[in-house]
Amino acid sequence: MKLTAKGFGAARLKAGETDKIFFDDDIPGFGLRVRAGGSRSWVFQYALGDKQRRMSLGSATPESFKSVKDADGRVKLGIREHAAQLHAKVKLGEDPAGDKTESRKRASDTFEAVAKKFLAAKKETTRPGTYTETERHILKHAKPLNGLQAAKISRRDIAELIGTIRTNSGPVAANRVRSTLSDFFGWAMSEGFDGIEDNPVLNTAKAEEVSRDRVLKDHELRAIWKHAGDDHHGAILKLMMLTGQRADEIASLRWPEITMATVPEKRVTDAIKLPAFDIDAIDLPAERTKNKRPHIVPLSKPAFAIVGAQTRRTNSDGSLREFVFGIGQQGFSGWSRCKERLDARIEKDLGKSLDHWRPHDLRRTMSTLMNDRLGILPHVVEAILNHVSSHQSGKSGVGGVYNRALYLRERVEALNLWADHLAWIVAADSNVTPLKRAEA
Image (tube, rainbow, N blue to C red; front, side, top):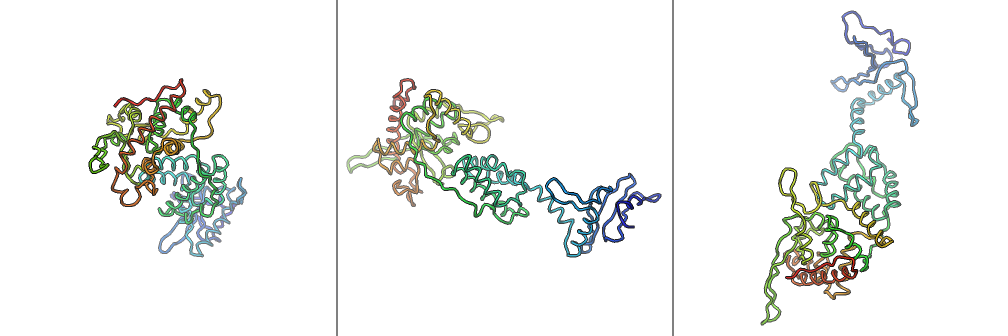
């Protein structure tokens, strides 16, 4: 029989039949499936090698013969035209049923779905701070891509997204998100996600960055210290001010990293030898530092007092929590929200806001003031900052790998001197609780 809008209703089951396909006389493989329960649906059946493949084409209604346009202007063929198109594909050696399954699979591989797998993989292989940045780039900045099929994201999609980020958050944020997205697509290709054959981030424009040289003024350091408070965010900022270490290194501080270190003896002359002594310190393993080198951070008395004021907490299962700061399974991560609140407190007190600053500026400020005001030798400052690649640090090359205590005595003296200077800056305002060095 010929399956038409007027004629397909004549297809009936005979007595005793429960399920039958009525095939069209003109289009091979095109059929109407009728079941005893009354359901009617279109099918397309064809041979693939020695196997029979069958596709369901939807419910059989008179309306299914009409070609219609959807809301996006795409044409949905009438059922006869659709079946004829499928037959033509089979004649060309294609596998329509396999293509449909593949398309459905690709459709489920949205950016959001693939991104979840990407983040899970990254969480196992990257430092906590790096992972936090990656997670923010994917979940916050790249959120407009969520509903798109990952395989269909184009260079234009990426360029428009990066342009929006550049406008709203600046060139640095745009470039960092761009790098994360490039990493995402490179990973997706290596994992074999269907249809992702190219990296659409390639050849998109990279924003021009201006290197930051922000050094905080004394009144700004004082305001930040005064209003930082004693919560985790405040304690982290104060430790950064006192030690000059990177934000993530302090935010993800672990209790086992707080230890004692021995400053080795030092021979000044043949007749004079300075004895070894122990200090309180943070011992950062290689996997926790940016340059992948272990690093000892001497703690001045005020810095150690801040660490000592933190409560050792337990996990939900009763085990001791590894991280000093933060909640959950990682260290502290609430930077943006807490900084907004800190800036608001400062603005309320001063009657105006500070010029834009970020936590990393504390590290640059300490370095600058140590060099300019305190006369601390550059190689000692560089060693404190763990700038291992710097020739001034003395830690480049093989010596830097093995001699973790290089300039340790000088670093202890420098950080104690800096703590005294910071205490003077903070105490310059009588309304600020002075930062005091404990008696030895």
